[in-house]
View (cartoon, rainbow, N blue to C red):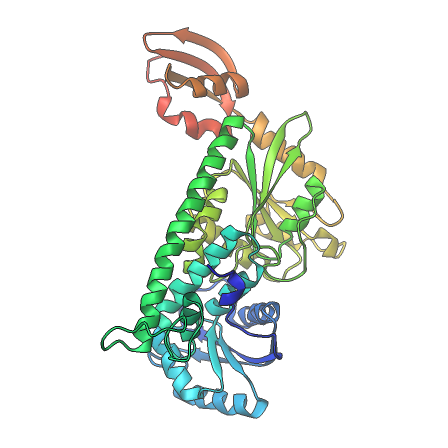
Length: 445
């Protein structure tokens, strides 16, 4: 199987690709950022992908045009502007349907590429995935997204998957078409096979991760996952807390593959802390599905630290976007500490965050300068090891691992040995409650 760089969709190696960005405001369509702010973010994404943004356009619509998403007049306007500015590409700040791609490519002509926000994010992920696991997951997301969108612009993906186009126009240098098959049908068949293989490979990765998580649980070391909007400062925070050297850059999706480090807390307790992939508004559903194995690191964590860039003008919108994604992956019920990062970028009298209800209980920190990190560790310590919940459980003897866990991590007040089970009264850390929930004693007190 080829490395991920072979599926890079935006070739900036030969020259700087000139891009024109298009933002669309749909009436009654909810999004976390305003159209203008979303366009600013799209430009940051374009820069991260190596594009040169030469102009931006936007349009207000009652509803998307079924054929071209934007209105016909706007299509003509963008076509004229692209030709005059010698643009190579038009990037839409929305996810386009197969029909939109087909009609827009027809309108703009073969010299101007059409891509959407999802394509751009997928391409950035392809550039930044360093591990085999990350590469597999991004490649699957790419193929699943582009399979229904195969047109003249995307058929090179299928040829790459098959080993390169030969002189016959087939795949891998040989004619693989069946009777009456078009090249597009051949490409689709090859990509479906590729998707099937990738899913099997990723399932093996998922099983491996699951075994690794089970081993971690047996070690009884709590796992803390850092979550947050891309570029919120998660990598800087894990470096500051653990004296690590996780790659840091002031750009979107600078790090993609999850990193886990051991951290000693005050009092001698140890935890594992994981830096996970950053979220973003309109995170492609194909990525969420493909990255299921990685995102399970979040949903299986004992505690989340939600890192918010409080210096960003859209901090609250970014917070809401992350919370929406956590809900999508069933992680909103995990205990969470919210930290407002980049305090060093605030003016001394800037305290507007205190007026935001969602940030009332948040801790202001600076991962860069170390401000308030000691208080953060105290909060983590308290959440994981000092918040005990009273509990009485009836544990069958076959669940010896849970009996041992209660003794080792909880506080036992009373223990009674019965027929086939042991009844333990005491208290346990709140993070362990879910493990014992189904064994709660039902006897009358």
